[in-house]
Image 1 (cartoon, rainbow, N blue to C red):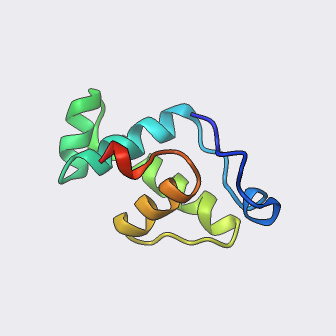
Image 2: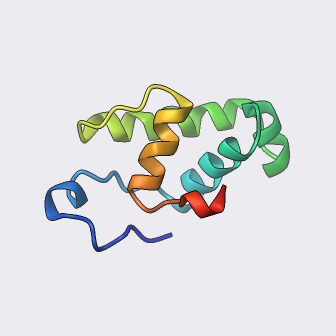
Length: 88
């Protein structure tokens, strides 16, 4: 998924680049109540989901936009064009 190019330049430079797999795992986690359910839907382990989410959080922290909760990560993903409210 591409990042929205209409974002202001200052915000666009602060958007972490997530891999396609990181986005896939993140969206699966948003869709389910737990990381265990997200993992099962992707045929991966819960540990792998945890690893992806930890890396995603680290990427956001590196650009000065920490996201410590699931809700904060969802907000960041919407802001950055990785998903939209219409998807939910």
